[in-house]
Amino acid sequence: MKNKLSLSIIITSILFISCNFQHSQPVIETKEPVEYPVGYIAQSLSTDLYDTTELYPLNEEFLESFIKKHTQYEGSQPVLVVDFPKEWGVVLVERLSEGRELYQIQSQNREWVFLVITSGFGTQRILDLIPVAANLANQSNDILESEIWKTVREVDGFFTITKKYEWNRSLENVTQVEYESNPKDYFYSQTSIEKYFINDFYRFELIKTDDTPDYSAVIFYYNDEKPEDCEETIPLLQAFCEDNSILFTEVNSNFRHVELYDYKLNLVANLDITPFMDLQEGIIFMKEGENTKTVPFGSFDRMKIEMKRFYKIVGI
Image (cartoon, rainbow, N blue to C red):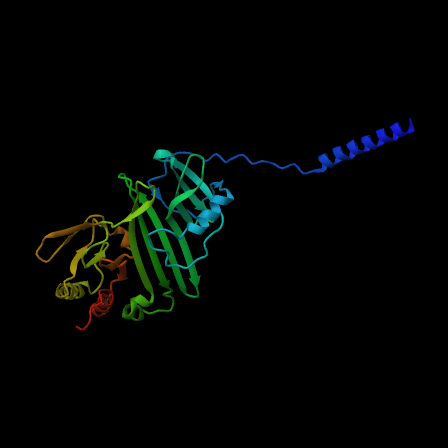
C-alpha cells in the first residue's frame, strides 16, 4: 500500500512539472502574409520628401535581395554619392501577364522610388529592377549639389526616365564680372534621358531614345526678353557652330517642340528641351554619346571655351 501511494505521488509530481513547463514556454506568433494594394502604377513617377503615406512592409528575404541588386540595371548611376537607404516599403503592386508582378517600392526617407519585377504566383523573387525617381542633395560649405530623377510611363508601355544633376556655388559676395568671366565656376548642370520597356523575358530593357541626338547641336533659349549682348554674341556663336559642323538654333517659346534644321534647311529633329532648361536663359549642348549639358549664357569667348571643351574641338 505504501509503495502504491509513493508511486502515485511521483506520477502526480511529474505531470504537474510537465504542465508547468509547457505553460512557461513563449508563444510563437505566426505572421500572416501582407496583402498589398493591387492596381495600376501611375503614368508620372516622382518623389515627395514630405509624403507621409504609410508604406506596406517588405519581408526580409525580398529586402536583402533588393539591396544586393539595386545597382544592377543598365542605365547610368547617380552622379551624387549618397548612402543608399536600408528601410523600404511597398506602395502598390501591378499584375503583369503570365502571373508576373510589378512592385512599386519606396524608401522610408522618400528619396527613392524603384520598380521591381517579381516572378509572381505568391512569390517575391526578383527578376529585374530600375530606379524611376530620386531626390538627392548634398551641401558642403558654399556648394550645393542636387539630383532629381523623374519617370513618365508612356501609353506605348515605355518608361522614360529624365535624370538631372546640378552643381551650384553660392553667388554671395560675387560680382557680375567675376560670374560672367567663368560661370561654370558657379553653376553646372547635366541631364540624361533613358528609355526602358519590359521585354518578353520580363526584364527592363534599355533602348536608345529618340531624345538622344545622333548629331551635334547648340540650342540658345531664353524666356521673355533677350539677354544683354545677345545681338552681338549670337551671330558669332552661330558662325563658330557652322564652321565646326554643329547645328544651331535659337528659341524663345514652344520649348516642347523645337525644330532643328541643318544648314541646307532640312528638318533634322523635333526636340523637347524642357528637361534641360535649368535657367531662365542658357545654352544647351547636345552630342551623341554624351550627357546633354546646359550652361548659362555669357560672352562669346566664354561660350567658345565651353563648346571647345564639350565637343572636343582642338585648335582654332
